[in-house]
Length: 421
Image (tube, rainbow, N blue to C red; front, side, top):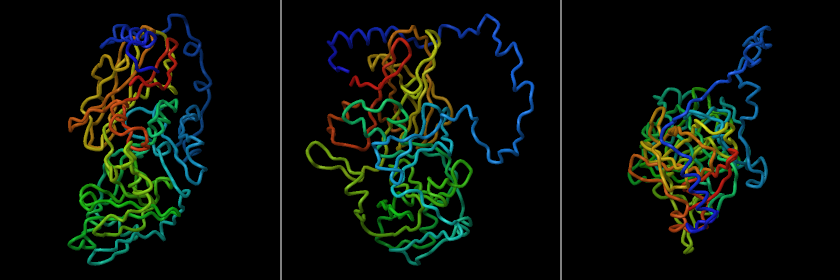
C-alpha cells in the first residue's frame, strides 16, 4: 500500500477508517428476537449419555476445535527434519500457550531421550566437573516462572514488505508458558566457577548439536534448567527431559535436550552466532550478540485468519504484547493506520518478560479499518514502525523485526496484511 499521504486512495481509506472508531462501545449486542430451534428444541446432548472421562484418560480438546493447531510454512524450511511450527495466536485468549500449541523450532528432528539415561554435564572453568541425572536435578530448589520464548526470526519474512497473511505466520514464532526448573546459578555454584570465567556454552543432545555462547552474568541471573512447562513434563519437541530457559533473550539460546554446559572465558563463536543470528546492515557490517527481544505487539483478532464475522456494532479488538526488558504497562490501538491512537485495556497478570493481553472495544460502523497496536514497556521503550526500523537497519535483516503490524479490514470484515509505514 502506498505510503504517500497525498495518495487519494489511501487518504480516502484512512478517512473512512477514522470515522469508524470510538473510545467506548455505544451500542448493545442484541439476542435474536425470533424463536431459535437451537435453544427451544432438545438437542442430542440433552437426551443421550456421553462417554465417560475414562474413555480419554489424557484430556484432549473438543473435536470441534480440531482446526486449532500449529502450522508451518512449507517453503520456509526444507523438510520436517528442520522445521518451524507456529503458535495459532488468533485462536487463543489470555496469556498462557497450551503445551500442544506452543511454537517450536527443531534443526535435526525431535530427539527421543530415555529419561533414565539422561545426563547433564558441567565442565570447563569449574573447580569440580559434575554430571547430573534427572533425580539429581530434582533435589535442587525449583522455581516457577512465566516467560515468553520468541524466535529472533519472528516476523523476519516481513522485512521487505507484507508477505504472510495471518498473525500465526507473521508473529507465531512465540509461546508463553509457566516454566518450572532449577536456577542455573545453583548448578554452577555446585561445580564452583573459577575466577576469570565470563561465558557459558550450553549444548543440546540432538543431532544438530545446538550451541550458543551465553554471558555468565545472564546465567547467574535468571536462567533456569527447566523440566516442566505448564505443570507437566516438557513435551519432546520442547526439549524433553531438560531445556535451558534464557528469559527475554532470543529463543535460539534456549537450548533444548540440554546435555552439557561448558564454562569459559570468551564466546565460542559457533555457527549459530556467526553465520546465523547476526543482523546484516545496509553498510555490510553486522550486528552481533543482539540477544534481547525488544517490545512488540500484534492484534490477534481481528486478523487475516480471524475476520470480523458480524455486522456493524459492538466490536472487540484483542492482542498480545511482550518485552524482553520487563513488563508492558500500556498498549495503544489505532483504527486508521497510526493517525490516531487509543489506549487499550490491559487484562490479566503483568509479569516480567511475559506476554500481556490487551483489549479495545468500540462501535464499528462497517467502514474499512487499518488496525495497528503499539506496545510500550516498563523501560519507556516504544515499539517502532517498520519504516523506522528500516531507516536504521536497512532490509537485509532476518532477525529482530519488532515493527508495528497493520491489518486492513474491509467493509465485509475480511482482513489482509498490509503496510502503511
